[in-house]
Length: 75
View (tube, rainbow, N blue to C red):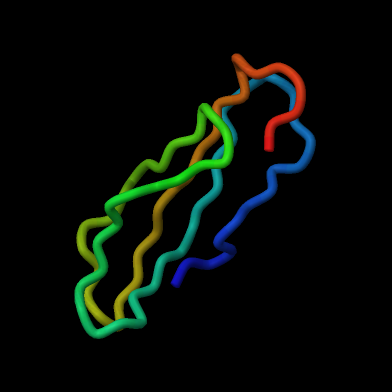
């Protein structure tokens, strides 16, 4: 389970890297391993990928978008 699975940075201009922290909770019965991250736009990445998260535990990870080379609408 991920808090606010999607994050909208709103209207931005080319500039500094934008970051958002996501809270990840393992509500299952097995260790949770994040193996893949899909972004709707280029320049997005996931940093601080947590180690396997034990059942009933949580962690945080940071997603960032670098709009410095973008032009036009990013979605």
